[in-house]
Image (cartoon, rainbow, N blue to C red; front, side):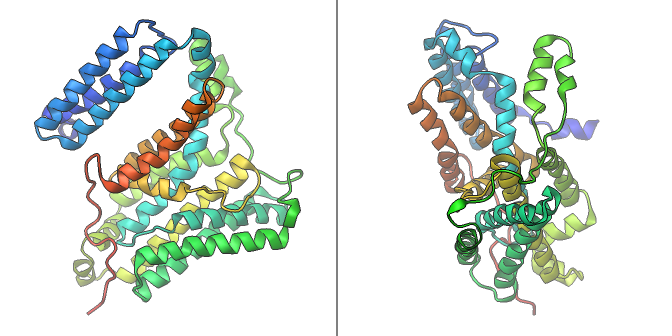
Length: 403
């Protein structure tokens, strides 16, 4: 119990996190079910969050202080705009259960890919090729489900294809010691070319089959609607009734990854290879094998993201359908400081912005477009290190030469 208390934030770091919570509250106070109609409430609460963030920044908690400042500005803006909107528009756009369901749908491929990137980069290999591995998994899952008539085998095909791309990246990065950024970029172009060619070769102008394709089924959780009170049951039912198996698998994978990387001897070996490969080699850890396994597993998980996108969400394949999600997943990994739960929070944030953009189309097309661009803006922020600079594994990007 004492160890858990010691891990909780203290001092100005705790104050900074409180500022983040207050900033979020500035937005929530004007949204359903509270729906305060006076702009005074979100403005005052948002300014309070800004003050807390500035105080944390001045006291040396730059990263958390910046988060609190951003949350205060975001909450103030959203809260003020909500007070200017009619109650009918708010209730049509902000349906929390539906938004959470859409957030999970948008975040699931990012979660798989970011966890894949975590394994690769924790072993010391940069994986810019997540985008290509996702795209490969998406195509071969559709093709596998089409030719076998089974969504289960479609998933297997997608995972194997992502693993093959990961193995190729591992060969160039570890054995040939090629530049890992260039190698990952080459994987992206290779996947784009291969999937585009095979798509035209196999399906041509008619596209992938829209009828009779075996896709991942949804879980049946209608009993959630019966949970009292009605508001809670309706929220849970709207949020989780139409989720399919891969959404639950993605959430379970976050916990599994945390245990595997941070609570097992194999995870310790993985992290040691990414931090100090020569010391790991000295104590008998096979650096090359560990990195090969990690990068290949990275491809499998990124392929799972593509599988969900094709078989669980869109139920078809289009060339370049990943549309930059691999890079967003990499940004989520950086946002999360190369930790599974941090990456999950970042993926959910990106997914929420996409879900909200879809809901806002009924209200304002221009505002919807703004929220659609938000994940890409946040990607630039994460990569540039504008809001605090995350510290990557010490040996990431450095080929190891055995002596």
